[in-house]
Length: 162
Figure 1 (cartoon, rainbow, N blue to C red):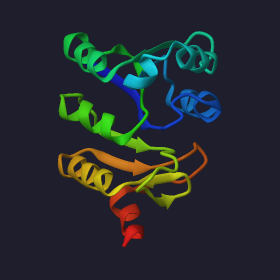
Figure 2: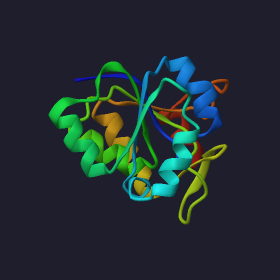
Figure 3: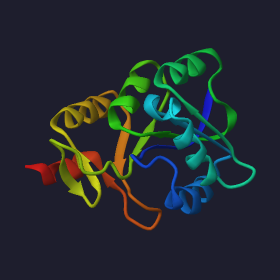
Figure 4: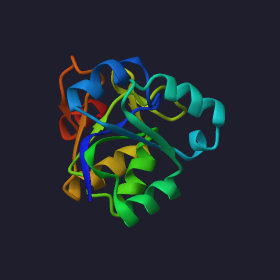
């Protein structure tokens, strides 16, 4: 239904590190960002589109639109980089039927109630439970901020919270 090049949570969505690093490393030909707030903000959509390299298809969808599109037609057979702004949206889409084997957690940023687990990756208590559930469901969840940084499996990273 979809050929995932990379599935990532990144609160900045598309930025220099994603454009310069992850797109090339993953061989993505298509980028889909799913974030309802951003999909309703024309200025943010324009700004994010400027970071996308020439020749890469790009779209920003609300959570509802993303789920409907995936259920109707998937995102095609080309390598798609799927980016969620937050863990909850990724969780909701996976629970709605997105066939995702691996979920990369990039920067999630400082937020009320969130604690740092690794660099700019922070999680709330609710997000810990959501990621645990995804792991129980068979999704490989790991932390990796940049293409140069190491991967840390969620189960190992979570130990830092205790």
